[in-house]
Image (cartoon, rainbow over all chains, first blue to last red; front, side):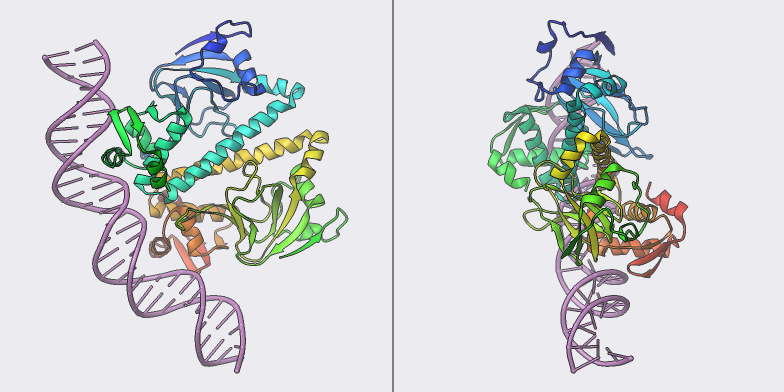
Amino acid sequence: MSASYVTQSDPGRNFRTDRPAPLSCDPLVEAIDVMGLRMSFAKDEEIYGQGEEADLIYRVVRGSVRTVRFMADGRRQIGGFHHAGEIFGFECGPEHRFCAEALGEATVMVLKRSALRGLTERDPGLERSLWTLTVEQLGHAQDHMLLLARKTACEKVSSFLLEIADLAGRDEVDLPMGRQDMADYLGLTIETVSRMLTQLQNSNLIEIAHSRTLKIRNRRGLVDLSE
Amino acid sequence: MSASYVTQSDPGRNFRTDRPAPLSCDPLVEAIDVMGLRMSFAKDEEIYGQGEEADLIYRVVRGSVRTVRFMADGRRQIGGFHHAGEIFGFECGPEHRFCAEALGEATVMVLKRSALRGLTERDPGLERSLWTLTVEQLGHAQDHMLLLARKTACEKVSSFLLEIADLAGRDEVDLPMGRQDMADYLGLTIETVSRMLTQLQNSNLIEIAHSRTLKIRNRRGLVDLSE
DNA sequence: CGTAGACTTGACTTAACTCAAAGATCGTGG
DNA sequence: CCACGATCTTTGAGTTAAGTCAAGTCTACG
């Protein structure tokens, strides 16, 4: 892991994000980018651990991040993925309930929450930003509960591909995660994920170039399958 | 559905809650109780609908409430239950993603969000309360995702019984919901829920008096089963 | 190249679902 | 207060979607 301080005058700052920041006018994003510490992580490296004190807040600059949770016997669950531009790590109370890991090479900005607390008094919009983010996360969690509880394997995989494609903004997608991560996100096994993908390909709904690169050929059909 | 205004001077106000309000010192609870409209609902009556504008905020005074969501083909998912004292209905953005229904006879206090917005400027603790609530809901949603994605039917039912008992604060529980609601909350069918309950009873972990009344006989054992 | 890890495919198993019917329980009106 | 029907719950028998286990195949990288 490598780190370097970034100041407001850093001339390259605005060019390091892979895609336009969705909330770039947001005071929270501003605060993290200006006051934060820049850190890079290797593939699968831990950004923070389950049970650790949650006194930092993060923003993905490059690459993607997963939040993971384990049960005592090793069963694994992925809470979500965070892509370039997104803020994460503010989920809950005093300590993290998930750990966060880099999906591939990833760079994030890190800011102490205590630093935010000072700003909060001057800028009440900052608190509102944090709340809005939490509400968005909650909305996503609610959608995901429906998926986990009531969708079939085929519907889960279809929904997932659409989610990824919508985020990327196009129908040709480079998956930043492997089959195991997809499976643990969708509550399935790698084998089932793999089978559903080939099934979708055989139905001419998608085309898999390499295992990590695929194209949606029939979005309408995928949407129908995802319910 | 019946409604009546409650003013701060309503002498009976503090005696209508079934259990001590967990957040009674909270400014948000204060605001809802003082400024809110009191409404009563019959069993299964809708409190708000899926897709409706979300401009109200609610607090359960008596009884329990479920939030429900349907897929196009009728598959049903329960997002959560809210019991006496709890605040709900603030989940998301402009419109409700779930509908809320009374589990049995239920009374709730209802307050316009616009009324809160005015107070917010005078009392910044109010915004913080809303955020804290959202964070708590998110935490619950994350636990529930793990349950839905990775737990077995037996673990799901055990976890559920413990959740209910912890809320009630004792090991003798009156379930406010039927088997269908439990099933739709846990991502199972009624038959499976019923089978797991009899299985837990046969293992002497619980005792089912009537289908809605049960006692935890071996909490330790239940905890082990819930992972 | 050759090896390690990731992905796919096939054969078989199983946990949970479906369908069906029998018991409980509840509410209602005679 | 009891009888009746409606609804909810339990139980049984059979089915199935997804899981497990075990080869293979592909890919990337040293």
